[in-house]
Length: 522
Ligand code: HEM
Image 1: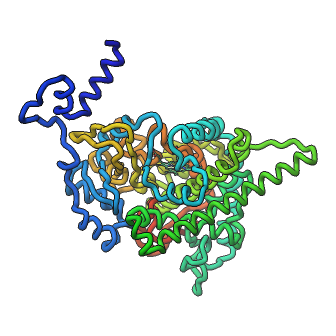
Image 2: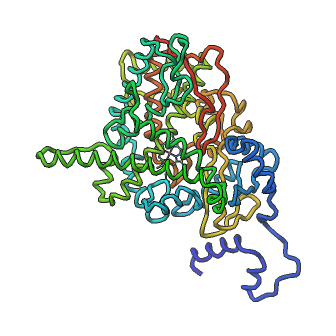
Image 3: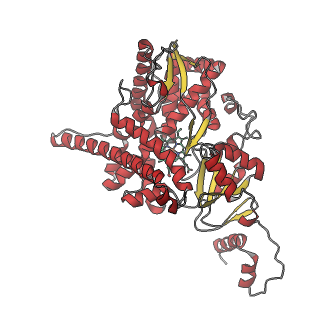
């Protein structure tokens, strides 16, 4: 037997039941079969009613990240629960998460039951990288990977991103001079945006999605969507609000069995309307950019592009696919970065000694220069550790997922049937005291201690492997550049008598309420 065949049949022996194997060998199965692995039936977990009550009556949807920790304490590292109509196996141990991801196959699937896919099918939109599967996903991934994963390519966005950070600093300085209310908020519905009482000096309400959408739109279109103007353009405001609503409705629509969509149509309706707006927004900006380029060509001018829409167009992707991808990239690049930057500044404001050490590191590297480059931030290990530690405490995606569709897989002592939705509990592992002593404390220096090792899968905020975050390098560069510049200009302090802000799950992990900070000029 050739070697490969031998290995394959050994693997299949592992994943099949003994009666099956006995039958194949032409033998009668022994009366009592000794089980080598446990099955879903043996797996602990809350009954459907208890979980449903937790989710809908005890604010469980917003507390899904906490339910991971509670679930692990109650049932151990692997348990099952029914999320509405979907049975999902939770895995909350780094070594077991590693085991799942190592078996994810050639074209990993995040979740095949996503309401995001249902929406695209319903409206006839193309899938983007977030939602595509199989060969289609592979094709888009390799096109985008060329421009988003290679360090040199990503470094070339430094100038663009620094331009956006300069706008942000100007805006902060302007607001400090103006003493205009609570300073900077994005959305009119934020309670502090029309205050009656003057705020303490330099107090800003830190809702950063406006700034961040500038960053991602620069990378995508080489143009800004204007969020740092005194008045945010209506369409940008609605776009950001649509992202928020869509995320809120994602969990709800997934947890509701489909027949309930007819009885309670509102969540699905809001979900679809939000996506409709986001797609229309993406399309408008792409069309605008394309017609600008066409005009230049007609005037005989040379057109050079350093933005992703241009690269996608060069690859001769269909317009439908460009719309789908750009919309998904816009979406993926807004709340993720703004939440990470907000938490980083929030924790630094509460840890003045860490902030002073980071400031010292920055000024040491910058030696009087005003604007950091990618090479400068590469020499700032503590600054980078601040981002890592913030993502450990507040992983933007608190629970990721995988579906292994073509075979059953072994996870710990269990055999998980193919097509089962497996939830990877990153929030629980990254707050586990066995891997991170004092797990709820903000201690960026832990990432600099060479002897302190933790399991490599204990904190993986960008995921690992073929389907990991494609925007990771851009996100890291943008957060590092923004943090460095903000700390060079300002000392960041907490709101006087400000209380603790907790995270909540809204598909993504976000601050439960506004983060208010004081920016004192240095
Ligand atoms: C701090 C910021 C960010 C965090 C923590 C983050 C985290 C993640 C995670 C956990 C995943 C899933 C990985 C997996 O399933 O293994 C993901 C996927 C993805 N992210 Fe990010 N992300 C961030 C920023 C961005 C940005 C800025 C962009 C776009 C410019 C982006 C685009 C994407 C896309 C397109 C995918 C899907 C990749 C695929 O399916 O092949 N992300 N991200």
